[in-house]
Length: 219
Length: 396
Picture (cartoon, rainbow over the protein chains, first blue to last red):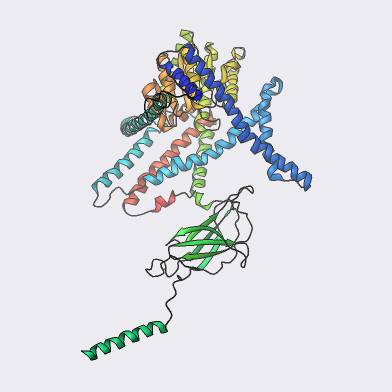
């Protein structure tokens, strides 16, 4: 059995969270509060040291230094102040009278980054998919490859039909959509099994900690 | 016999002397030639590409070249430093560095560099001539992404056209979605039971498409809850998401004519750590016993834990995400699931705003273009034509 107090605390918290499987109870409530509180505090520190200090404080510091020592304006480093200003504007939510100003940084963040995501989505969800599906339907001398290619193209075609929202799923169109949802569900079934297995490995890791690291019953 | 021996002796002696009289063939491999250095195209200006003609001893048994070392200097006569190595048979190297000046591997833009390539044999080596100077500079336009630009333009044209039609009042049909049809029923159930509605926006940040779609649905749900005076709880994972959610719900309550019923403390931040957030939300589910749970947005490994807990708590559950790996869990554990793009469609369906409807229609037309390209592309590929494949090739 472990003699480390850290291991004992971790084991207590693990069992406390797992006690939720029985029902909500005071130990779970305690562990939940510790988990939420510690993680929120931890993330505040991480954000402060990994974002605020290197991005805003350091870069603006360089800009100020260049201005004072060399007498020139270093626009590149001053540009980091923009993020800081947006952050301050966001905090204006705390002042009810001018809280509406906090919508501006929200609009900037959501608008600009959604625009950036558009390109990523178009490349990964459209271009790459199309590229991978444009394959020869017939592979000479290889029946398996031929069947595989046909399944891939038909599955993609019917899957896209299912996600066509401008037309009701009736007749031939509905039939294609039905085939599409079958393809989708078979894919989800495979994905489900795969992910469950990976979750089992997480459970095994926790059990290994409890039985091995904490209780020392397995080595 | 004696004569034969003497002839053989003389032959071997001659052979030995002949061998001594000529020097051994050099064991240095022959050097690479035609070295060229130029700015790497379609980048941010911190890389130079070097190409060369392989050594004549590349792939040969004698003096076989085993690798090429690429050396760089800022003057042709200066000291050259090794920048990298490529295996035998390769004649291209990208000398890439960091853009941050603080970085040890910083690669300056607009500065001339000279390169030479060293062909390495087992123990010896030979070097090419020094290349002409080259400097790195960034490009404003990435030629490898022209297809993406064309796609964005085509989509934008579709979107603008349909938004315009929707604004003019044209009825744009969208097929009903089971999950969305159930929204009103779920809110009604919560009202009848006198219990709150729990709305979870997922773990995505505010700019993610799934989160944006979820905000639109939240607006509609919040408006209904304001009309029915049913409390809505929105525990958030991200501080910016919380701020947007508060604005969304506040606006919805105002639109419903019940700003007095809006409670900011019901839309709150929990934590930004995945499983701590799950622990917190699970606790809320079991203590508040919400009648309806909405899981709409970006979800990861927490999806099944949340949905299972909601199921145990006896709530009606409506879920939707574009995170493919999590959809199976939602299908298994919730009552209605919006699969992938249905989430975006749902936001347009509920919102009924011209911009959303027009964009959804544009997406459908985009899909039609994709379907046609797929069929034509697959048929063309079957007959050996690669035109369609090249059309969708994107260089990143």
